[in-house]
Length: 383
Image (cartoon, rainbow, N blue to C red; front, top):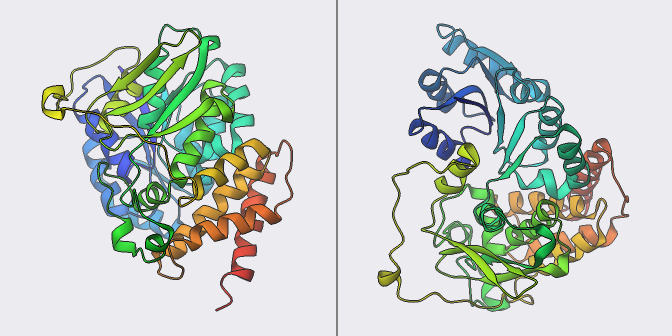
């Protein structure tokens, strides 16, 4: 029996994780943490019977307590509540599916309590990889990637010596605007950007996929996970989302992981590793597929990707500035306050003025986020 805590249980990845738990009787839920969707969280509490549940706001916590008083679950709130959920004693593994830099501190504390980590939260490594990876080694815990691309690379490297990696081939669907010109991107509406051709994701990540910023964040994440430099990671457009990523080795061999696009597969692999459990999902029919195509990304039109690579090479606190600017810009786009291409403009502006801190501590990471947000409010929200 494996016992887990899920941070971000009511989001897209969190709900799919619980779907996997439903179909694996040897996985038990010890703690659930969510943002403000207490109705959904109540349903999850009643179905999965955790000992602890966390929400962000104290008022929401009070309402949730009254709703689930008959269950005996302990309800906590705020960052202290998130940390308590991440360090609940009975959990073996903490599933980090919460969106944003809010996931950094709970992940660090979970590692210090010697919990294995299944990580779907990009920001944790993008902003704090220099802290997280040494802690993983120091405390002797495992880190299982959950993003489909990083899970694919992880699977390709099973039994392989990582010194033999020549290049990581990080695949990308290209998003809903593949082939668009700069002029076409300027006219993109929120409704258009929320239509991903292959994947079912939350709103923020769907926009990141459309801008290709998501792929830039994944390049940074892959660097930390697999010890690869930016020049060793090549983004490849794979429109069918069938090849989830691949690794090229020093002898020229390429090993790829393929399958139908279904996030439950990498989620289950992280929960059951090193075993593979049966799963009811669509099987890939190569005869029906017929062909698989590959293409180079358009780095001039989709500026988020080269901006991310530049931030990765700069290092230190620059990836945090990049990520914080993107989070704030995407929120404004979803609120219809800026255009689609202004997401890139805001990121570039914030990175250009940021003074890099070489090895930022957690508080300096959080301070960088605040300073970026303040700059955007001052410069970009004037109207």
